Structure formats: C-alpha cells, structure tokens
Amino acid sequence: MSEVKTILFVDDDAAFLQLTGELMQQASQGGWQVIMADNPAEALAALKDHEFHMIVVDERMPVMSGSQFVRLARGRFPNMPIVMLTGHVSEQTRQTMKQEGIDVLLEKPTSSEGFHTLFLTLNELLGLERSKGFSGLMQNVQLQDILQLECLRRNSTVLEVFSKSESGEIIIRTGSVIHAVVGALTGEEAFYHLLNLKDGEFRLKPYVEPAEKTISSNWEMLLMEAAQKRDESDEREAAESMQEPEPAPPSFPAIILTAEEEQAGIRAAPLLLAISAEGRVLAGESAGHEALTTRLAGLLAEAAWFKALTGLGALQQFEARLPKADCVIHFQPESLVFVQQSREAQP
Amino acid sequence: MSELINRWFSRTPRLPGMAACGMVHAEGAAFSKSWDEQYSDTVLNALWPKLAAIVDTAESRAAETLQWTFDGCVILGVPRQNGLMFFVLLSNKTGERDNAGVERLLAEFRSLRG
Image (cartoon, rainbow over all chains, first blue to last red):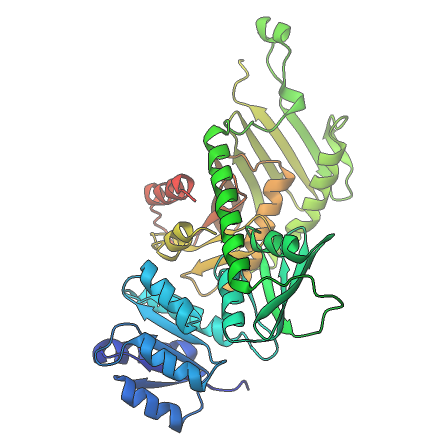
C-alpha cells in the first residue's frame, strides 16, 4: 500500500477551507491526510507537529499574507512543494510566486469540476519526487521558472530537456549555470536554444560534474537574454502568421484534373483502395499510392487495439472533412476501405 | 499549450451525451476529462494519440472536422494548425445528445487564439 501523504491547507476562509479539505480527502480515497489551518499561526504550529508532503496556501489572509507565510515555511522546508491558491492570477502574483519559491500558482476553484482539477493537479505534484528528480511538461510549468528556482535555491542539478526531435542538458552548480549542450551546440548558444523550445518535457536529475564548463555569465543575465530571444522569436512568428496563406489542402493525385479535363467537364474519380490485413490491395489502383497502402495496412493492425478498450468497441469508420475533399476509412475485421473524394468535382 | 487553451479546456462543460473530452499535442502529450467511469484518464490519454495517428495516416491534419464511429461511441475531433487536436467522446449509452452544443464547443476550440 502506498504511503499516506499529509497535506497542509491554509486559508482564513473557514467555509472554503472546510469544503476544500473534505473534497480533497474524499477524492484521495484515503491516500491523503488533510490538515487544515485557518490562520498562519496555526499553520506554523502544524508545521512543527506534522511532517508534511505539501502546503497549499491562500494568497490573501489578514495579518500575514500567503506569500509571507510561504517565505517562513520555505526557510524551514526548502524542498517541499508549495502551492498558492488565488482568486485572480495577476502579474504581481506571478512575480511573488517567483520571488518566494512557490511551485505552482492556481486559481481558487469555484465549481465541483474546479475542485476535481485542483485535486488532480496536487496529486500530480505529489507524485514528483524531488530527491529522485522530477519531470513536467513545459506547457504547464515554464522551464525558465524551474531554472530560476534552482538557481535561487543555489541547487546543483542537471536539467534534462527534451522536445520531439532533440534533447539537451543544462547543468547548474550551486545556483550557477555552468554548462549547456544540445546536439552540436554548447554553451550559451545551447542554453538559449533549449530555453526557446516551444514544447517539450524536462527532468531534473542529480548533479554530475560536466566534462567542461562552457558558461560563465550569471543566470539572471542568461534568463534575460533568453527571454529577449524568445520575444523576438514570438514576434517573428506572429508576423509570419499574419502573412500565412490558408493551409493548402492535401494533394489527392487521383482526383486532380488537368485544365483540359476540367473544361471538358470530366468528373474526378475518387481514390479508392481496399486493403487486407496482410497489406494486399483487394480493390482499387494502388500505383502511386504505395506509401499510403503500407500505412493503411498498419492502421488495420492498430484497429484491434480499440476493441480491447471498455466502452469503445470495434472501430467502424473514420471520416475527415477536408477543405476540398472528404476522406473515409471503413474498417472491417480483416480489411479496410479507404476513399478520398473531391467535393469540387462536378458530376 | 497556450494559457488560453489550457484554461478553456479546464472549463469545458459536460454536455448531454458527452462522456469525455481530451486533447493531444503533435508530440503525443495528452490531457483528458471524463464524466463516465468506464473511460479513465489513463485509457483516454492513450486513446487520443491513437486517433491522431489515424488522422496522420489519412493525411487529414487539415480537416475541418473528424469523426470516429465505434460500436459503443462516436468521437468527434478538431485539429489545429499547430498539431493540437481536441476530441469529444459521445457515448451510445446516453440517449440524448446536445449536437448543437457539441458543435459550438468544437467551433470554440477552432476559433481560440494561441
């Protein structure tokens, strides 16, 4: 049986605190022990009495604000995940979050769905074991924020960054970025490249001394430079997207007519292929569509996967309405039929 | 995923007939919301990339709408230019469906900036 996690919730709104505590306790199905404190003094006392796995604190509280409380708690528990709840995520609260070492800033839930999302988020955070390194999606947590956090805490770590096509490392030694590498790039060039990846994942790994030290600039300068490069890149992309033409529809060799054929009123024939599970073409003309034929045969093998899932059953048909054509794949147990038909072709 | 899309997804309402919904990125990262216990997040997070693979096979990333018909449900999908896809799973178990509402939801996703 997995370890029961002890979570401290701090909020001066007693009704909200009670509701949150009960819902979280219920959602965890016994996996969490929720301790509630409706003021920072009580919360600080609780920190002495219990060993917590996470603190969830309201931003706005009288006498001592959430961020002041976090500063005190962070001093005693530098590695504990701390989540701040707020009614409104402003730029100022984001700044506070960065300065005080708050791991995640979340809007206070107002619906049952919101509470469910809160539970899932907290549960996910609890699963990130810091001592063994944690990973996350760059869409949810900014890589810059993690870097800043590690540098502020003067940690030594290896930040491994992956995207779909590449992976690299940023090495931090006692709060200083000392090395970065991605592909053939090293040093600051590699650092900026990794920080400007749009999507990907990262993982914090235990520190290993690098073979070389390629970066000597301080981390604040590096992050500022990376932010500037990112802004420039975003601006370029925005300018390009303004000029981007409508996406070209996919090409359908079987239904493209020459100008002469169109003038003559010739009707475009649909592309039709019937494929067996072994990849044999049962009907249709596959010449020129060999790659598609291979992919479709592979798809037929994959289709069995869906049937095993409860509530789905067998996949019968896939339909796509494209800008100028329709595409249908009809699945049968041992074969499939693929049809692409232009909507522009005149009968 | 942009903050706007993230927030929009977190607030996706449950419409009549809708058992689950989800999103998948071009690189395969998936997110799900389910209102039916037979569709767990784990299953759904594995399902969306498989559906996206069918779209790739049919070279249909430029599609306006996508539909997968299963024995037990129908899944509707909308792709975006950046590869992000949104799915709505409509179970056959529930009789009533808010087709107009689902259409609105798909149109919202299509028109979101970011």
